[in-house]
Image 1 (cartoon, one colour):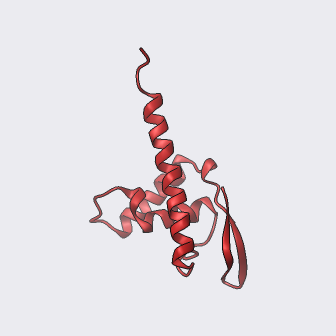
Image 2 (cartoon, one colour):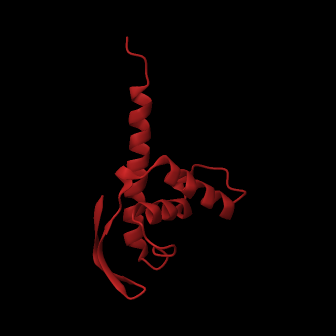
Length: 105
C-alpha cells in the first residue's frame, strides 16, 4: 500500500513524501510481534487492538520497515488517514475471512 503524504515529512534528516506500507505481505509473526510489544507496554489493556493508536503505530512501523518513533512527529491529520487505512485493511480482511468460513447451503 503506497500512501502519499500531503507534504514532505522529515525524520532523522531523511525526507518522505510517500510511504510504502507493505500490509499485504505482513506475516502473522510480524502481527503477533506488534501485539506482544503493545501488550508489554500496556499490560492492563483489554480492548480491540485495531482501535488503539499505539498498536497501529507498531503495525505501520513493521509494515513500512521504519524505525520506532517514526510516526511520533507525523502531523496528526496524516497519521489519522494512515490509521483508518490500516484499520480498514485489517478489519475488512477479517470480515472477508469470517464470511468465507460460513457453511455453504
